[in-house]
Image 1 (cartoon, rainbow, N blue to C red):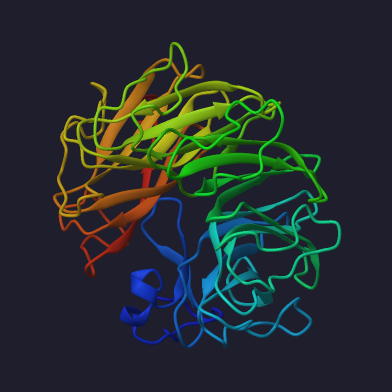
Image 2 (image 1 turned 120 degrees about the vertical axis):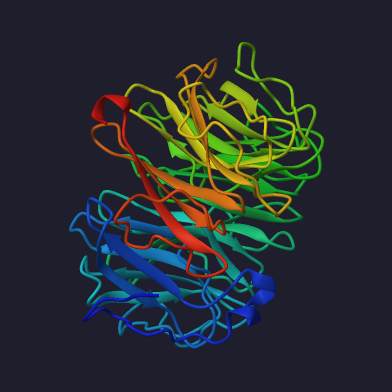
Length: 439
């Protein structure tokens, strides 16, 4: 991978990626910054130790333009800094870590592990509050995982519990840490923070006794694996609301949820349940394939689903991340194996490109009306092999930025792109779409 001069790590440091925990870990993490037109790499660096890292699960800029990253590592020697909360590897299969780099990627301001004797794993990104404190979320099966006094749950209850960690802005202190779970398997896949510091988390659970609150729209587990949406107080001591979301089969959520302007909470994922909870007037209420993507909006008080619907074709879909524009339209991204996924007449790519993996296929982008009743826009994005859109961001003029991965040698690229051809078996991609009026 190309790196630039003077960055914190210009060369690959890890061992053989094929050794990485069943393909989940592999090689070093990397960070890249491109020019506005996508034609030049401005800065690029590796980040990792002598074993394997799980990519970068979350990256965000703080108030000073520094880069904060979070993920998981199996390396006992990532570049931690003096005075950080936990400079040494905790042991076990993996530890969480967080780091802050300068915007030019030439200096590590701080880096710390967070983990203990077993497996500790962040998922679905990270978040910052208004003081630039750092929130990591994920799961752990370490019975000695560090928690803080007064936390909602201090002891492991199941085979794996969800975890919420808050680090100080300088990485030196563990301000808050709590577990969250029932008697089986629980994991948080995303986190958001409101202006008061309240903590919104979402993920999935196999626990029949996951903690829910009075008045929740779904207080009992629907089946094998359900999603959950939970709001914690800013000190991590109590649940402000918590609900299941799911039917009789399986539901999963990945990556970050979205927090609306008025405290509403949006979650996307995948469902294989024929009785997934949908709402009256929603765009699609019946599952069309083996599994469909879902989009759910929870009311600000956590007591009702403002809307909930499925979206898919005769194959399978998985939605990975929602975002909402200033008009209230909901943008979702993911991937599909349905050749009849409901694309719109103005789609950038109306025909399914194909794929080899049973669960991947083409990337998809869909835009839904604010009330969840209409599909405003939908398109495939991909070539003849496997393509996944993993994340989305919106620009100030309606631009849509997509990142993901592709194995397609015919993935659509533009003239003078930084890299016009597939470099290996699977490459990352970055796409910028502009509204019709800007073309």
